[in-house]
Length: 252
Image: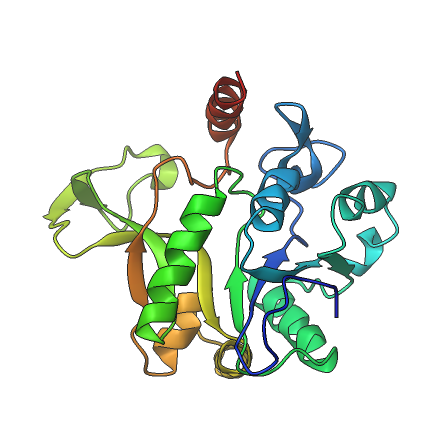
């Protein structure tokens, strides 16, 4: 196991997991979006730096596509810290990449009861302070949780057949935003618990959109810890431009 900030073998440690096997096709480019340069360095480097600079993190596992494992950029990124380990555990879907990488962690001898913080590589706005906030809240409660933001905007439900055959979208209902949160990452759960929950969700062909949804499927209720608006996911070109502005401003 990569060297980390070891305290005591009997105390559960925290590990980061970044699934990076996606292609990021909506942004285009020669490299998957998480490895494209954003404000001066590969986008995934921001998340890696945040975890490296969080003292509670004992190791960082990055699941990549097997076809990408020999790309020179990984050597550059892994040289940033001995905590970082790239593994060819990428699968055809996010949940399979996470499941496969969790399995690699178990095979490597990481204790089943250790904590894993799964984070989107396309969320470069994460900070050590947010990571520590999540670790503290989950550690105090002794149960898993995730960063999330209470919804602030009014929600509209569109007609089922909106935008078909050139028809405009039409609102049919306003949905109350009370008790609604927008999930972010990291999402922090026990290693074996999360592996088994995702494995079962895949077996059932359930709609697992994040780690928390797999845990919910297993009958548990993850904690919601307030994150930050800057910890948004870069998906569309407009997101890229906005995040680039934020990152460039933050380093000035």
